[in-house]
Amino acid sequence: MDRIALSTVFFASREEVFDALVDFPRYTRYTEYLTDVASDGDGGPDTRYQLQFSWWKLSYTVHSEVTAVEAPERIDWQITRHLDAEGSWTIEPTALPVDAPSDSTAATRVHFEVAFDPHSARTDAVSLPRFVSLDRVIGMVRPKIVEEAQRVVERAVADVEGRRRDVKIDYHDRPGGV
Image (spheres, rainbow, N blue to C red):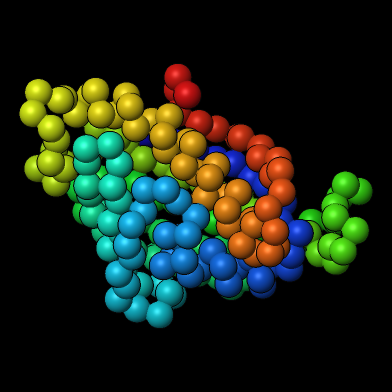
């Protein structure tokens, strides 16, 4: 299994951060490759999502489900078809850093973690271009997944805080070779 684990600080309350992160349809604003989100549920446990991604010469629908929610502390999810993957957002209060913007009144550390087996991707679920192997695509996708995780976090921070800033991201784990 490959794993991405990172964390950063949002200058907002846990509740504000949680409300943004539990709203999966909002993620189309955070990523370059997520083009549409359809949902069945209220965002709580057992809510199912169909996430439509488009990248390079590929289009792919990811089926996911929220497996647990502990507001405002944690959101767990898993991919339910065509790929073995699961992840979580953990949201915890933290002290306001000395370098926080002067108008900041709260700080929240957010941990994002995802574990996935790229070799579990069902080739019949992805329409690969002719003569392109799944191994080649996996090699191309691994660094994109790390880049996209960073982009999602940076854009979520900007969305919650209402402005863009340099976001310090601490990587705790990432796939080999990335």
